[in-house]
Each structure stands twice: as structure tokens, then as C-alpha cells.
Image (cartoon, rainbow, N blue to C red; front, side, top):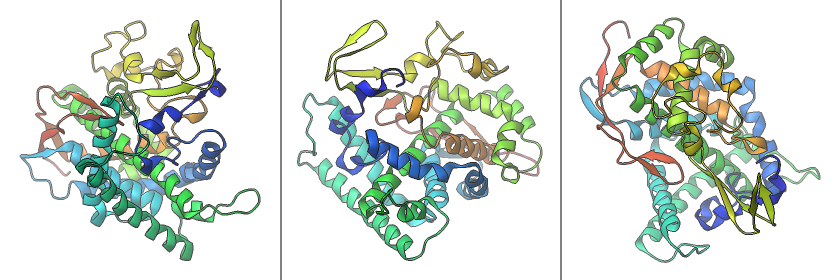
Length: 383
């Protein structure tokens, strides 16, 4: 990722990922990746995050508006819908309420296809004909129709959102991005900003369940002005224990649990020789639970992050958002989103009684296998 970056490529993913994501920032290499990243960065600048905070709080309130005390709800599904609404409203200026079901079908179809490709000893650029393939392409067509309709609308009526920035962007010679290039860039943000943050929130609720001591500390920290009334920087500074909890959830259950690179030429990693064509995999899951670097690595212990632990850790012992030049462009957005969601929901509802064991289901991301059924109980008091 750093010292031998030029020797490796993300091309190994093209045999795993469906063609829907082929041109996106998630898979692009070299100049294509750098070009997309430069165009996206302004959407994640401080002044933009300031604008997003109120929407994040509003959508968090909206997500729990129909919750009834004592209900069993699939919290992972709830968090998926919440983050979908947040990412489409803040970055694309869309209310996606009517597109939730189509998007859920697409994501489920993508997960099935990726799982099938990972398990298969044979890799084909395009999926083989099957009912699963039909479901995948039907879902891709639905999302493409939504994306291209929005792009045409932005070309006619620009707004203050990421899609409008990309539609208005030009190369050095003044050439604008094609609709396909805008679509690819938006899909990268869509999947990364929606899926991974939903996983982070789901696992956070899971590790908090039954931890009354930790919940009390969080609730005490949350007394004060509403989360969206502070700037993102002020909010993160005002809620240090919340950041400890989120970092610990990221340590134990990193949504991006593994990263890979394929060697473009014979090279080396440390003392290890790597031949051209071989794939090297780096696993945050493994590093985050390595007893050489973490005391009681299997234990959920937010207090370990006190006194700026992150600054004292050896490099690459904690890298939930990857690292180096390709570190996740939306990491600050994701942490702000998770912070505001928990700050909005926790004072109103207690989430408890998940299944005794929830097995992680590694696919594109680290989802909770079988969902995350939990009981929601309204807290007493003014909230």
C-alpha cells in the first residue's frame, strides 16, 4: 500500500466483482482512480460535512419514528435503510424512500453473485446464465434507470451535491465526464457509504447490547445540545467516548475485513518474495485481533482507546478504512454518520437481546449472518 504500491494492482477484484462496479473508484487503478478521487474530494470537505450533519440527524429520527416499545426488529435491515437514505440525500440530493426495495434487491443479488464467485474455482468476467444472474441483471437495470435519470436531471438543473459536482467536472482539456463515468463514480460512493456504515452501526449495536456500564457512559456524554447542532469537528471532540466505542467496534468487526492487491511484476513484501500474478491479502480482521498488539484482543473494551491509543499503535495494526493514498475517501463521513445515528437513537431506545451468537458473514463486507434481530425498548424520560 505504501513502499511497493507501484508493483501492485486492484485488478484481482475484477474476477470477483460483477460488471456493475467495473469502472468504479473501488476497482479503478492508476490515473482513472486518481482522477475520480480528485473529483470526489470536495464532497467530503469540512464545509460539506457541516451541511450533512442535520440531514443525518433528521434521517435517524425518521428511521425510528415507527418503532414501538417491545418490538423485535432486524436492526441490520433498519441500519441499511437509514444509511441508504443518508447517502442518497446528502451526496446525491435524492429522497430514496421509493427506491429502497429495488436497492435492497440489488445489494442482495450482488452479495449472492460475489459469494458464488469467491467459492468457485473458475472465474468468468460475466456471470453464467442462471436464475441468480437474471435477478442480478434485473436489479442492475433498476438501479441504472434511477442513476441515469438523476444524472440527466443534474445536467439540466445542477444542485449542491456530489452528482452535480461530477456532472460539471471537466478534464484538463475541458472534456466533461460521460454519463457512464459519473454513474461509476457515484456507485462507488453509494456502495461504500451505504453498506459499510450500516455494517459498522449493526455491529456497534450488537456489542453494546447488555453492556449497561458502557451505555451509561455514552448516555452521560450525550447530555447536552443535539448532535446536529454542533459542527462535525466540535461533535467528534465533544463525544470522545463515542469515538472509543466506534473504534472498538471497527477493531472487532471491520466492515472491510480484507484488502487485496495483485503483483504486476516480481517484487517483495518485507522478506517475502511475491511473483507476478500472485495476490497478496491484508486482513484488518486478523491484525485487529493479533495478541502481539492488543491486550485481550477478543474483548470489547472501549477504554483501551483512552489517551490517544491510535497515535501510539504501530502502523497497520489498525486500518479499518485501508491506508496510504487509497484510504477510504469517505472515512470522516462514515464516522460522523455513525456518531450522529447513535447519538440520536440511543437516548430514545434501548436495543437489547440479540441472538446469543451472531456469526459474521464475510462477502463484499462483513455483514451479520442472518441479520441482527433485537428488541427495541423506549427509554423513559423526555426523550
